[in-house]
Length: 185
Image 1 (tube, rainbow, N blue to C red):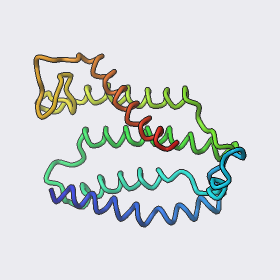
Image 2: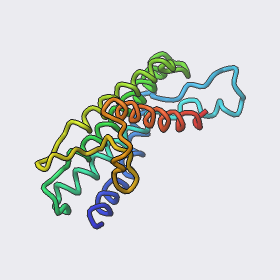
Image 3: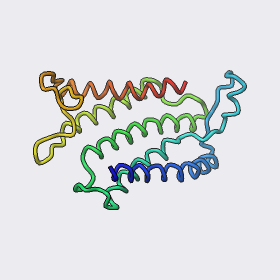
């Protein structure tokens, strides 16, 4: 429990301290939001708002996880395959978001990646995660994930199989990623 609190504290501190720095850097570089001209006049005040805020979040995630392990607040042997795989998934999805924002900034328009490109990026990230999470076996032969339906523990009677599990990973990642994007407008 202390390790989780310590990692969360590091992540929070990094995010709080890094975000204003990135806002200043991105503002100076002109990495700001483009607003559609035909949109409401009230939205025009958002023009130039720094984009790419996910950079601070991803850096904070990695700093919290690695900081808790490197500073000795971990009773285990070090960073786990499970933790690194989840961070890898978050980072790969952040790369898709970064590319979306970068295209918006580079082309000076409010449209970044199209729906197909975003979907392909999410698909590749989720499939890679699903395959890798089933492939890392520990000394006891267990993987970070199970092909069986699971809530608190596996329900052995209901198995998705490797392909079904990987497809399930893709559906979950796509649903969560696009639910967030849908609320963004």
